[in-house]
Length: 167
Image (cartoon, helix red, strand yellow):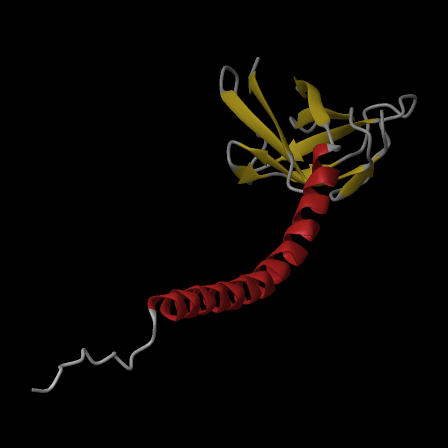
């Protein structure tokens, strides 16, 4: 009688199979890291520029100190803006009740140092500028008792807001 022997399987052993699975997993991980690294590198280049610009904008500070309603000749809204930040600012626009106001920055009397030109205007650190804002088509541009929401916007995107009630 013949002895029956168990035939050995000709497949891969479990040790080699585990090593192959680990090798495949590591190679897929390396491919994923290489792909993500190139995407992340292009992202960080743009974000560095964004954060540098935001840092400059955060150093820019200005405030609307006071608002007067001119009752004499032109009935303009006189807006005084002071630069209180650590950088020179460029004022690009003035809005009164959501409408862009035309502006003339001539002072009432020349003895003060409020010498500004029309918009846009650069305002050095610590300086004050007076703007005379006009909007609409008829004078007077403001009415007594009305609420005026004034927004002054800079070139870097910062804004200063102020609310005033007409006399």
